[in-house]
Amino acid sequence: MGDSGMTPAELHALLVSVGDGRVGPDEAQARLLSAMRDQPYEDLGFARVDHHRSLRQGFPEVVLGLGKTPEQIAKIAERIVARGHPLLVTRADRLAWQHVRELVPDAEYHDLARAITLRREVARGKGTIVIASAGTSDVPVAEEAAVTAELMGNDIERIYDVGVAGIHRVLSERERLSAARVIIVVAGMEGALPSVVAGMVAVPVVAVPTSIGYGASFGGIAALLGMLNSCANGVSVVNIDNGFGAGCIASMINHL
Image 1: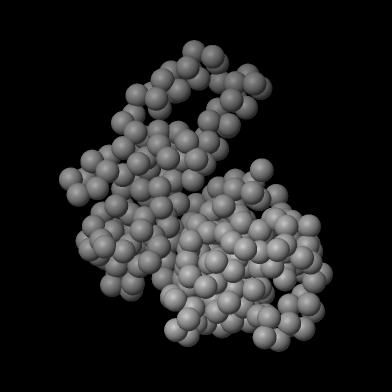
Image 2: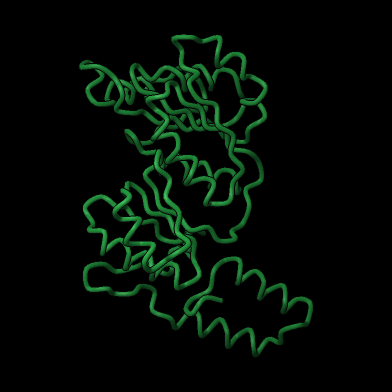
């Protein structure tokens, strides 16, 4: 266990140990009561770190780097890692990463995704998540989704630059798309790619509109509305540029 609380994997291991007789009921009860007594959050003065989120949702708190100072990000990251959890900071720059590394030396930075991570052993998803992007300009959002899903224990395949302006590109990937358990499709402009992909496969499609496009795209609103009005079955839509949200929901589907 970490120095506080109990992760779902640790709880499962404890129950298995009770089942095969390696741990007695009294010891198991003592461990559970100890975990339950731990404060569910840690007050840092400027932030309250939710250490019990992994118990409720299966993955620890994720840090949004926007609006936080590098020092604040580093302190929050250090407390998350101290509890034995994996670390994910989204929308972070290299300056924040440099501060995090002072407290968490093994933390990695992903330039395209603008994310800071530290990997831990987590439960594995049951299949593959395919992430498709319409254009190269959409790749930063697609990479945020990829980094998120990978950290949450999923196998990932990337299929980038397969937008509808050259529709033969995505049609040639039918086999890989059909083999996925869930697909994330990232697109700006008119946001048509998710409908095309969903019409080709029998698995859930998580559509991510991006803010890429000229004036009438209205910062991604055109793509958002296009995806919400998809004529294909099985398409769900997250917010504009929300690669993290797409990676998270795809991971939850893949772990069912």
